[in-house]
Image 1: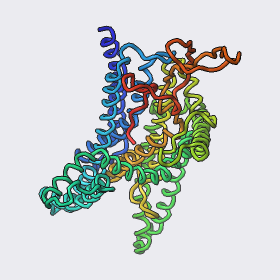
Image 2: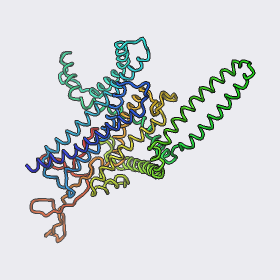
Image 3: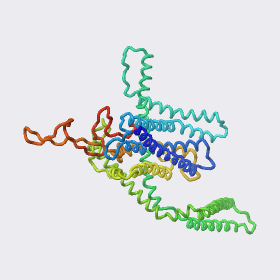
Image 4: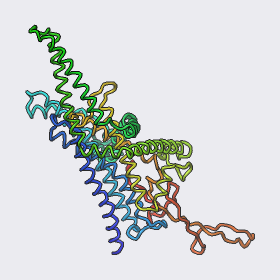
Length: 499
């Protein structure tokens, strides 16, 4: 009874943290999309789609720290399982729950990338034609979205049937063979989903190279460089207004004697008056911004922004060093490609992995740090997309600007973020492989004590038996941890992230 209550308490604690993070994510997505969407071109369907897609990307990132938390909380610091986690079936249920959470979010990402976002995008594109009614909009949007659905279906079929095992009965009828293929697809459904997600992860790697890498550079540099002073911008804007007013007066002076202006002068006068209206409108906006509280607070926090920018540069360098050491360790000491380049034990010191392990005794600093790392990649990616815009090779398709971003650009932004999140979830395993795989778990290593060999008078190590004395050493969990019996389950519980 006590173990059941402890299990309920630990599970509620882990999922309560996830629920709080979920609410924060939804609030952030709503504020972010509303901040950048164009007021003139906004639409309810595209706005809801962008908010939901961005929330899915952030929730997928937030599930990894929760996974590590649940896995780590199964054990005491001395390496023994807690009462509620002593049962192997209980640990398996928790692992399956988190695993189903991963597959559910990945399925939603597939749905968003291949169906929902393309349909909404083409539906809004068709709205540009005033003569198109709603039914024609939906029909044309479905027609263009069919191409994405076909690509998704091909990926699922390849993942399910390659390699395809032949039917056990070679003399079976065509109907029996068809039933066998349907059963194979049902049995290999997770393999098909994994292959599709892996294909999107490969595309996400290109997005990470393009946008995340740029965001990791531009975000700290923008914090250090800062923005131009509102007072200076108002002064510069006033000088531009005075200059244009002088040009207008100069042109108008030509017709003081009653002579009409030439066609060229009239065209120049119209252009100057239009520019004057724009500058006067900008002057009013700058005046409002100068008296805004956020502007005053931002000016007061200028030293903090500079320190934060320097800190982000150091963080980016730390990530680069951690990735280099981790990949070098895999190249030199891994078990090979057949095992997924698993490294047994600690061969090269990974600074980020060591930092997370050092923070374990102070709860919950290590979980806060892994959450910050996960969110750091997402926010630097968003900064990279915001500063670069949406590009197709060398052609810029859309710009991301506050209050002026078109709905199509927001949909593209969310789709790119979904792809980036898939790759960053994989990349974090290379940043700190030992901690991300096992969390703060430890295990007891039973070592037999040396015994005296009576026949030779020497000390020897006897195999452990009920009569022999053993000593237990607490060690940090890694891939080299021994396997336990089937009844006891694993010595170290791994995080549930699917391959």
